Length: 71
Image (cartoon, rainbow, N blue to C red):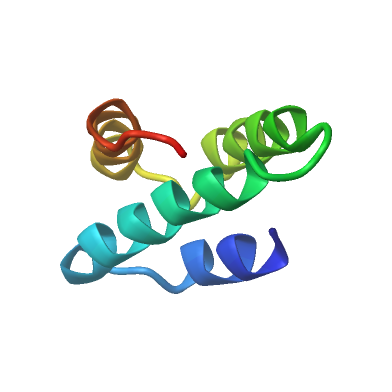
């Protein structure tokens, strides 16, 4: 989770797709742990509230999560 928060502070638009893939992979990993989806939702809320999370990035994250199938 800290990695995502640190990375979002230094992200530029050319790195959005890679960041979205990282978030989608993280969701799959969180699904494997007890209470993981609660933690993942907290991560998403935290990213959304972050001033560095631009509207375009947030939209890409939501689209990526909708398109990727969880385990």
